[in-house]
Length: 78
Image (cartoon, rainbow, N blue to C red; front, side):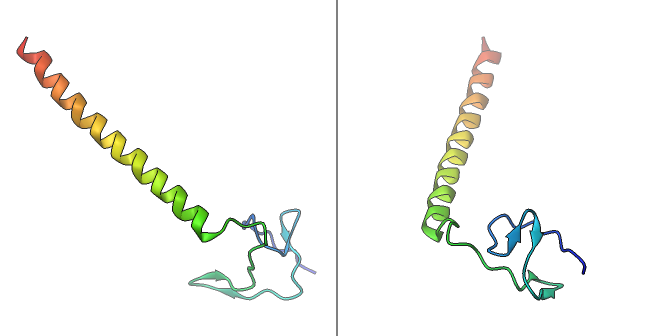
C-alpha cells in the first residue's frame, strides 16, 4: 500500500508525517480534499490578531524608512 507524505501540520489524519486516512482525494487546483484541521488548530480570530500585529509592524517599518530618508537628506546639507 502506498504511503502519502503530508505537508499539513494540523490535519487529523497526520501520523508521523504521513496521511493515515483510509481514502485520499486530491484536487489539482485546491489540493487535498481529505484534509481536516485538528481541534488544536488556531481559530480564525487568532489568525486575524496575528495579521493585525503584522500590519502594525509593517506600518512601523514604513515610518522608520521615511524618517531615515529625511535624516539622510539633512546630513547632506551639513
